[in-house]
Image (cartoon, rainbow, N blue to C red; front, side, top):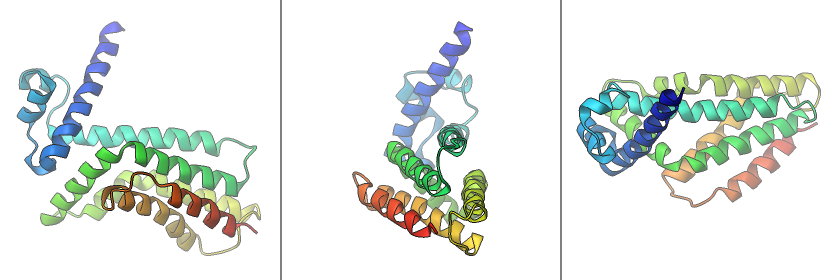
Length: 197
């Protein structure tokens, strides 16, 4: 048991150091050797934890998304909240976690720009990684409309409207380098209230 805990701790430390390498050099120029050097270990030791830099990067994103999903599920299961409150809390929770993971978002943007220069489709990659979040927003919108708490409207349009707040948060954090998203949080609260019947 203690070995597994130590392995996980070391893996987490590697992720933190790797993120710094990705931030300094960009995804394309970051190398496995640079990551190993930053961690103060050999490449051979690094291979015990990760196969390559892409796996390190993918694992970082997966960790963030799992954390987001965990918090969303707690909010969704709270029967004391109305649909409007659930949607608001979910959006605010996602935005808060994006704020807390600003560095990772910068690396993700760099990676997506790297992909767009090749023949790969960055939109497809993003969609695959966020499919559960999309489904959650859509199902919460459907539940709200069915319960009569939200105005009737096209689900796809409502979903796109709600998801645009998440995209705005990413843009403001990564491109505009905003220190906080207080204004966006106020906008989310206001906008979701306007959807209520």
